[in-house]
Image (cartoon, rainbow, N blue to C red; front, side, top):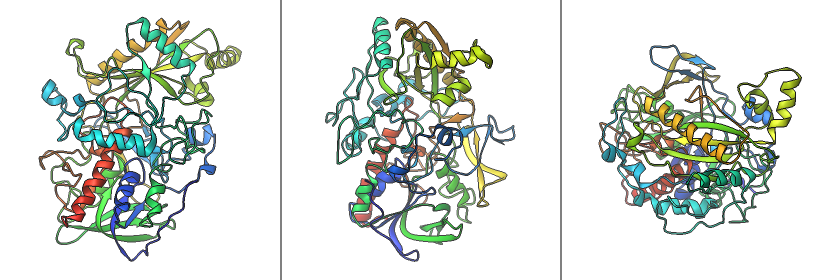
Length: 548
């Protein structure tokens, strides 16, 4: 059962921290700061929903965007083109808990290689690959906090990085797709393993275990089994009496004083009335698109190109992660619509291998991905009819006998892939629409094609009667928003330092997907949460020492 806010601060008060965003990062940072005695207001643009409010409504959640923001996104491939509304989209949620409410709940840790690939591989033409200023060992204790405080089910696999503590719960039960995937992978000499998932396989921390309803990706969990920030850390923050979650609060600008310090956040309340929440420090955890958007909107005489943007890196180096989908048709019903999306994966192709002739690595998992409406709109193989009696027959015949092998890959940081403000398209509040400029690097496309080939091999080895794959490339839609305010030691080539403090403003912090220096291998949420546990601890220590 979710608690309602235990604190209610007057609008005209000054709190210790304002956090913008309540998702995977914002919810964790709120917990870290409030449990250490600091007063916190979390501004969330979306509403607050209780578990009983979530529905098994594919049309509402997948096609109508009922959990998403009501703000437009414009999209283009290159700066020479005009960005258009509807040319691309971002699969994200706007409510208390953010996109952690509707995510698949894949929870991979990064490996040490992810943190220093630039040193290992050298420069890559057309990209701005850089090392992180931290390594896996620095983040490992915080990955473990995610496991035990947020709730992760799993068991270590053969390629997993070292860990200081076992998983708190065993893996979720294997599905038909997992059994078939494991069979095919082993025939090819690969090393399948149970997928670590941020879904409870047994009761944990006062929360219910998974009831295997099948409505995970794109849906909120009415049982509280999915380890969103809404279900896990936000109740802990509110229980302190020091944290107020303020929904329907859409941030417009971060305020700055003459001394170059932030003083609070201006936002629109539920009535579209402007409010100012004052704070001694501000943490932006909006996501990898909305955080740079807010900074770019927060211009001043000191920062005419956007707040904390002396490097010019705010909004640049947008990374999405590559993703591929290969489908296999099997002889018998699989009942894949039941239970969680993923139960098995392989990480044999995790590292970048020079023998391939291009940069990139990742993993492949077995999953159910397409609910009935989405399946009907595009799940059948390309040689299938698209209307008529044969189309109807195949829809029913193939739906329950099909599984997906999905590839999840690296995405290179390219400076021209970015988030900016659209000069003319506005939202209902009069604020600029997001303008996404993104084109896949050639190596990213090559890596995705490589993963399609490996996925098809696994499906054939598993005994699939028919195999087909979707288009390769980010063709106008994504869920991962990474790298747009990267972490680094040099203020000229990064936006935040290792404490997540912006180089330009001493009491402004950023912690979300924008902080990532490299993309990882396709499942970033656990790393975002680990960074947030670490950032919250370090920000609290700075405050305790009077260094804000």
